[in-house]
Length: 128
Image 1 (cartoon, rainbow, N blue to C red):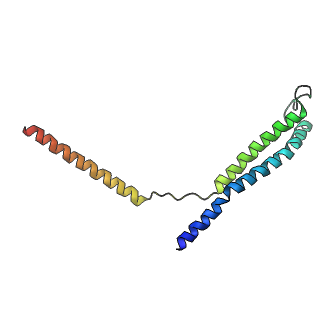
Image 2: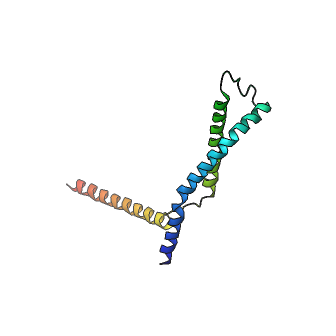
Image 3: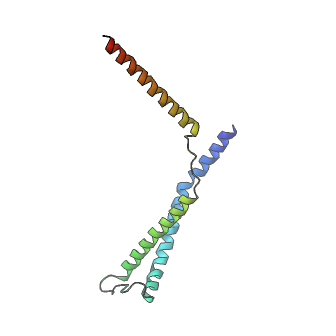
């Protein structure tokens, strides 16, 4: 009875994960959208990348802002997924040592039985 209550509570918690993931994506899009132009300004004022941004005649400033915003989103999403993956509890393996030992013993028995059958077949073939 108690186990079913625990399982039901875990299912309820897991039901909100897609919603939380969507909210996280929306937050990352917002952060990236507003941080993109600021990053472009910072890159323009500092000489971190030589020749950045290119002259306005080659690439419009709005396009550069969108490219930097998209790149920022990808980096933030990768970082967030790394954090989520590192903090999620690991599933307990459903295979344990007892099951492995049983399977191993069963395989050994099958091999011995195969050898005995083969030996009997060989003996019958010689007696003919």
